[in-house]
Image (cartoon, rainbow, N blue to C red; front, side, top):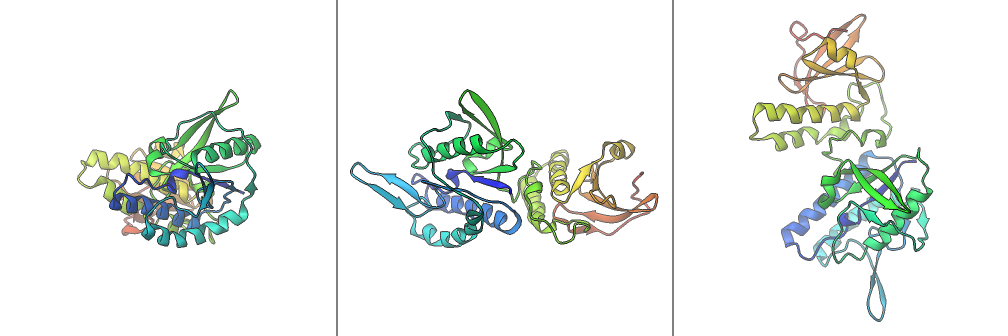
Length: 303
């Protein structure tokens, strides 16, 4: 089963943030957990001091255990109840890990300077990477402060360096990583079998590109087009792309549909195989919504 690793920074809301910044941090956490709850198959391990199960605060004369998230905001603590419920499914699928004393020696991630979760997390990473076989799929979900590291985090231990695949906020991530972790869809033969997992991609594209020049919008549009293709089981076809220089062409795994990123105007031109030809189905946005009706007389794909 896919294993998900959660950056403790998702749950650790700094007291140095003002009220609005703390709430923004919480919304980022909620958006991440909502997405994996709705669309991702996987398991999350529990371990001593995991910030999403409980966390340990060591005082001079005692040890105190607290429920997540790590914040003094009662508003956020009350809102966390729904997140806790959504995490339970993943925690039931995972293991309870009894951590040893060994920990990773170095990590490219940034942690809170006064973090009370960092040591436990580094011990868990050490345990996980030692125990995990090379073929086992796993993914690190990053906090906003670490989003610059996407798509990989570097970890060192025992004179070894390993690279961990990672994403920040799967709602809008465009590194073509989340696709293999999505739940199996009911009908893999649909034009966009994972359309629901792309439901915010187009809005994110519009927000990211507002006020930009056309050339900049095109470049970002290619990234979003690649992500839509990846999530919906399309693979890039270099041969067809060379034959159709106005497009970057992807082929659905069933071989019946073609997703073509329009390099001139942006958007996704969709085609269906009809014998030896491709029939234009229309222009679609990055969330799989129809933008323009089919124009088979002016939109052609050479097979």
